[in-house]
Image (tube, rainbow, N blue to C red; front, side, top):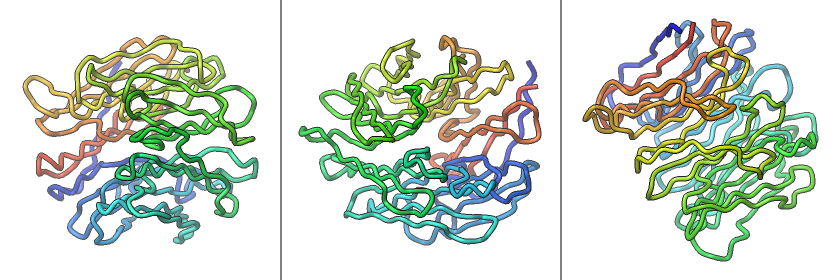
Length: 373
């Protein structure tokens, strides 16, 4: 199978271009745009929008306040047949905010901010059908990293922006890191999305599954310390039911566990290399066109041929977790795979976007666009 590889860059050293990525039709032209976040540009953090042929269309400046993290999602929040851009930002002072932009209308639809000091509001974001209204709802995690990790998840109604529900850590022990990860999806097949919250703390990690329709806890999964550092929901084995994917980060290396119905383990994808970030970036997409989605896992701090932090991206079959492809960063400190996104561009198959911020390399960041032909 041949690979077509393109790149996007802005030639600005140390800007961390490619820190976060998304794809979506945010201007209503019927084609997906490429959205790229930079955390450290000359005028602060920026979000840049590119056409499928890599032409820069728009630039949004976040401001001069020093940014810690940026998360990007595209979704048709208000059901107007055009994707909105959902942006979660945490700052170095651990405050945060989440904005929903209509790029086509040049306006901010919703804007939510931290309720507490140091809560890291917006560290994680997700979207799903939770309230039962017509719109798509927005989930915001605030793990409160210096408040003993007893975080919260807020659910905002996509129809009017109101706070619909919030979840708070149920764990009495300290440092549970509740809300480090968050996802939404119908994993029990009842037609309603569940809310999945990761709490990868000590002495064990836990993942909570809440009924989106009713609000109560339906399942709790437990694992080693670090279990739940990332969670994801999608149908990866082609059975028309969505699976729950959970990353564990521990002292023996990372692994990704795949659960059916949110509870029954199917298989695990193991990696015994420590502190390489394996599975801490994760997407699912049918990039090889076989009709089933692949599990794509970044390992942005992996070494390769004595090149420290070169990074790697791994593609696994969704039905059994078999390794199909592995690509490495080209240079030391590339951090290849720090961010990823996938979707339709100009090809029949999904294209894979791979972020290479290279900030610690003190060079300009890159985004690779990979298509399998």
